[in-house]
View 1 (cartoon, rainbow, N blue to C red):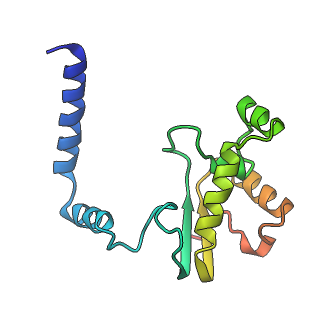
View 2: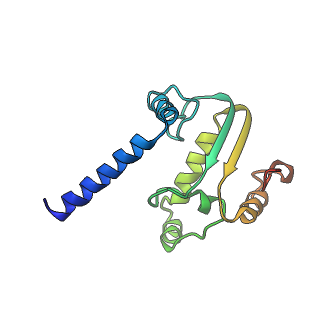
Length: 146
């Protein structure tokens, strides 16, 4: 067995061990999500659907790659050199893709919309959305009360 096979086996074994340690309730909920019986979905999964109440949870922490970045869209992260180059050339950027995804999720709400943005820079995000007129000051809560 080569080193790559050993690493892959170790990763598979670690995933299996983590699965076996998960509480049954988490497995049932995950199965419900996979079989599309969950009240939760991804931004890709809600296209064309509408709901009375929508909560959009935004968190780039586990995002792998460059296809979208809510931190950049909300001003909490600087645009990269590639972003700036694509912008100047009139090409699509990760911010453009993120803006479209954001529109898809937010436009699903018929009556009420709540956004939860996980960020290390909440004040920067607040200032950015206020400056752009996306929200009014009374609509933004930085910290939930105890």
